Image (cartoon, rainbow, N blue to C red; front, side):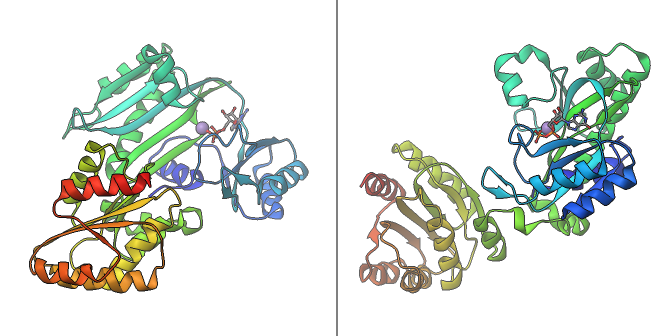
Length: 378
Ligand code: GDP
Ligand code: MN
């Protein structure tokens, strides 16, 4: 789950990281009021789930409440990379000398939470990693002790800070960001830019927090921050239907029961030269409603040229799943070819049911993947 900037900065503020004062507005009049309360120049920022808002015209400075109102009127309703701006953050505008980068992320390689810092903030870190990897410093936090003070100071030195006050501030922000990451079960906590103000103090200017959906049950307060309006339709539907779904860039839709089997299915699709359009786990008990929801989610992606259904019937009976697929297909009219590989309990009965349908039967996962790749090629 992704948080808006105005929500992320609220979490930063709670943990003691300095952020600029401000609030969120849904109308130009509210933006004016906030600017009046702030009583200084403000920055008005589109609250949409995309990066690079600045370049897209979604971040603008305003010197007076009048200007804030006018700028908010421009930004509200604006389309940024396919998303309509419904809220703006109005925050005090500050002058600064330098932009830094700081984030906490889970590194699967080392199985640690890794802090990433760079003296080249303000731009996307992927860009820095590509062009100037030496400008990035990393520090793995201790698995149980967390990010220790000496490590946080090392990071500060790594981004070129020498002034003792700035080093101390940076170290406090880094340990705070680590704590935020750990206590919210985040998958990313990022401050970009983290600026050195003209008065020499450090301050977070933009932040991004991604939360691990699988841990959200532990954080009802964070779950309550979810903004459905900003999320893709397919993700909302998947969540409502209790389906694990991750969109990918390929053209072969995959419908699988079980996360491990879904991963294996994607591997085999790739092995035979295909590209999966998604990861989708319908979980146990694939009844008609669930299969229908899964098919709707998969087919909503116009890139999908073929669907591979791979179901292993253990407790789930294959004939029940087959009935579910057939019934769902009556509701979801589609011309996209579908390949089904069903094995397990009551397999023969299941196959008999599918034989009556337009589904292309497959004997094995390898056979199914090859048939799906061929079908996607048309
Ligand atoms: P992003 O483009 O979506 O990453 O949005 P950012 O919040 O990073 O803002 C983009 C740019 O707007 C920053 O890199 C700054 O140049 C500018 N900006 C944002 N807030 C302020 C501010 O308080 N003061 C000044 N001077 N510039 C700001
Ligand atoms: Mn930014």
